[in-house]
Length: 270
Image (cartoon, rainbow, N blue to C red; front, side, top):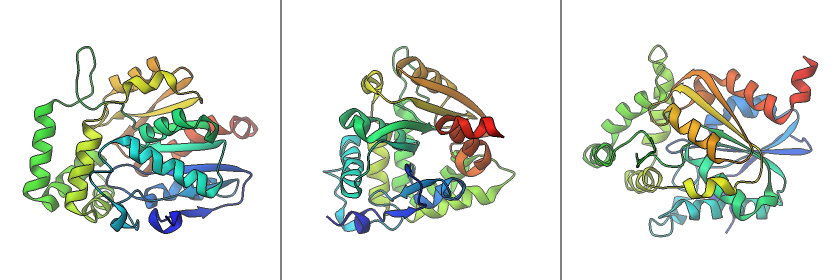
């Protein structure tokens, strides 16, 4: 496997520490534009596209092989092994946070710190657990994707992004989401929304920064509180932001929060 071509790996910056930025469902590495620019002067930045997203090699995707988040975490490990990465700072948006968490349990030496942006270990409600969705909600979502994918993309992208006063943000997400092949998007959505990563949380070893929007249709505040209660070493920050993509809609707030976590000495000098 040619990792660079398969996952469209991009590397910028020349710092001694490595920052890996992993995008969420329906997005691609361009979603991290603001953070990549903010940190490239002091960090080596590694970006990539998951299979089926962005400019990845779609021919390598198989719905059978990618039937769980475990397979995606193996791809992260493959990228790390190939690039010779270790002791990195991994920033994962949405499902990427859980993929990175699983990879860190498998290979803890790869990860110095983890940053979760809009993360959820389980989207379905359960006894004593509020994930935000019922099975009926998810079935409706799947039907919408199957009946008219592009129409579903338009509605979902605006709901997920929120910030109705800036509709251009929703259009940015809609472009990357609509670029996904509909069958891959549907298969991936089922894997994500029906995954349950709760049992892995107590085994995460690196310090974790949990960044949670105050109003996120995909991740209610209860989920952030649950993550904070289950992960051994963590810091929970509820951001004054709207929507599931604060790194795009409120990039400076997210960048400042990440910098305070990974380089507090820089903040102290300001």
